[in-house]
Length: 320
Ligand SMILES: NC(=O)C1=CN([C@@H]2O[C@H](COP(=O)(O)OP(=O)(O)OC[C@H]3O[C@@H](n4cnc5c(N)ncnc54)[C@H](O)[C@@H]3O)[C@@H](O)[C@H]2O)C=CC1
Ligand SMILES: O=C([O-])CC(=O)C(=O)O
Image (cartoon, rainbow, N blue to C red; front, side):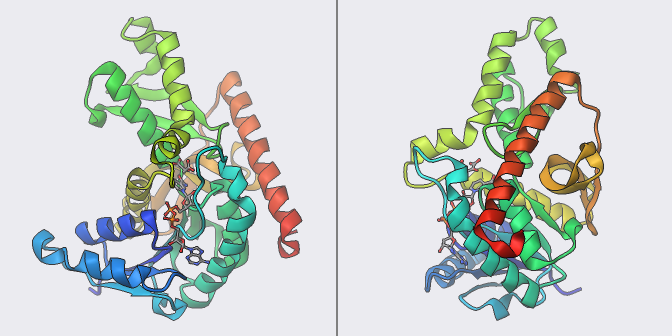
């Protein structure tokens, strides 16, 4: 069987890391696309030259031409601009919206059957705009954020409980911004929900609240440390987890920014919810029951995302 083709739109920090991970995991042949001349070609060659040591079978091609992504099975979009210290993700909306238009049209013309994973910020509004510009089916266009936010939550919890990250599961829903909703009730250590662990005196409510806040601020913490850009290793790993679920029809249950039309009482919008990813893309949005306080937090996150989508419509008439 021919290898899968993975197109990476944007060959910056995340794009390069995605290419490296896709090759090492032998998910398929990789095409790195960017408007910057030389960058995708240089990164593709550099990663290809790691192949003899790493012993992977995958070709890597860098390009500035959309025609090279023709027939891609998966497109992962990181094209655009990251934030710097002092900025919010929402400050990127105007500049990255224009990028989504070009990328959406490029994917529609060259890889209309692909499963498209958007990473560009502000995530929930950008995945919505990318879907609108590309015209691809909603179940084939999804945003990466919940896997990353949940991974950060899991990491911080594993430090607090001094247990393996493998035994910590967590769910972060809502928009990928300050209003994201880490769900403590649905997060566990080896199946034991976090509120029970507080009752067992394994941690305190204050410590748990601080971990929840650190999770919400997880992106900004890294931006503050790096100063010149934002996180890229964990974001790339998270998107690869989603791409692998699609390519291998794993039916993973992962939190993603997915199109909700009826689920969670929403009428046609993208926001972070639990999904099943398999060979058809988003196979299902898993409509979990939220407690009153969780629903209130989710509602305010939904309102924040709706505000960003309205802002996109105000900038680009074709989206209105
Ligand atoms: N959803 C999430 O959880 C996360 C989202 N991000 C976002 O991902 C995006 C990318 O981050 P990095 O890779 O660190 O940025 P980067 O600046 O290293 O790379 C972005 C690349 O996009 C390219 N680019 C710009 N306009 C383009 C266009 N029209 N077509 C093709 N390529 C274009 C640039 O030349 C650059 O190489 C940012 O918007 C960032 O905020 C970052 C981390 C997590
Ligand atoms: O914080 C940022 O700007 C990048 C991002 O979305 C993250 O790392 O969660």
